[in-house]
Length: 149
Image 1: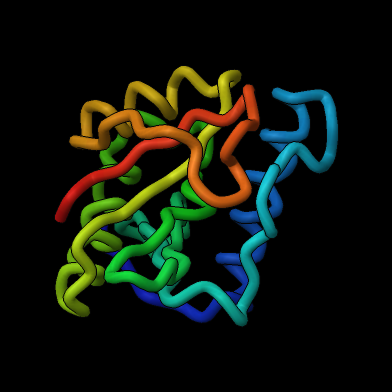
Image 2: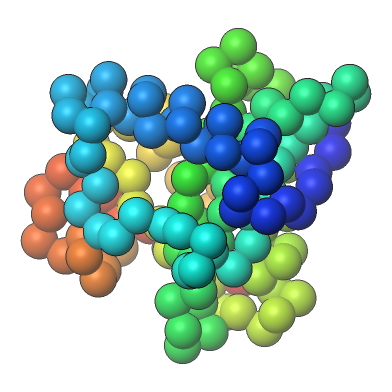
């Protein structure tokens, strides 16, 4: 398995993000449960895909520049049938390396209270709980985390 940096509009990136949003909509019972502004080509600094040995995109994630030497992890997703394959840690490591290479000091993220699998993954990856930041401040269903790089 390997990672590729791709454009926001890459067809594989678009497909994986659509699957991610569908899964979130199912978990939360609404097509728009995101408290903050949805990421876009204009505000995502980098987008990464994990590909299996055959070149199929199986996971994705991106970073939004938050200014002040930090960023926000956005749209992390692994195809359900590929969970546990190491794809998510591979994508997260690529994002963290990209951020470090640019002098960023920390990464933040928000996940929801109906995503215990995500909470386990991020805490195992060294992310620690923090108070809600930005649009997530005061949102009861939002769980926020940060890792100092």
